[in-house]
Amino acid sequence: MSVYVLDTSALLTLRDDEPGAERVSELLQQAQLGTVRCCGCFMSLMEVLYRVWRDEGEAAGRLAHEQCLALPIVWLHETPALLQRAAAIKATHPLSVADAWIAACAIERGAILIHKDPEFKVVPVLQEMLPIDDR
Image 1 (cartoon, one colour):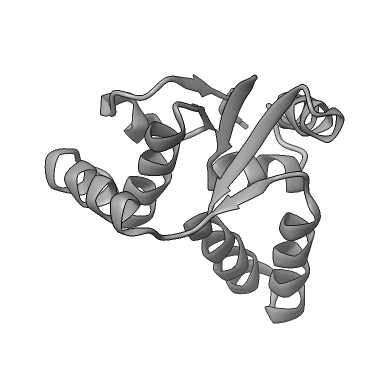
Image 2 (cartoon, helix red, strand yellow):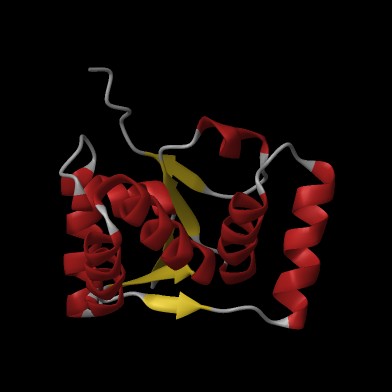
């Protein structure tokens, strides 16, 4: 079974119906049917909550967080092994702390990372970059 890790950018793409939302929706539909597994990093939950809260208010942020929890996503949380992997990625690649955790989740699961962040290109992980909105 194919495994995917949805980066924060993929979740926000779906929420905001940006280019690439159809691809994210397709993966989630397949996860609902059990033909693929979609995972998310705990850091993405925090990023969705704070970004939407900052831009649209606390109620909208909390709603976006709850909507993420309702998706057919297996949420991955911190473990000692994941911490070690995320620290190694952060120490050796120019990524944010959140992106290091997210990349570590994808590597640990042998998953394809779905994202819009060009910063991930330097990380040795299977990845699929969603189209970037050039408006």
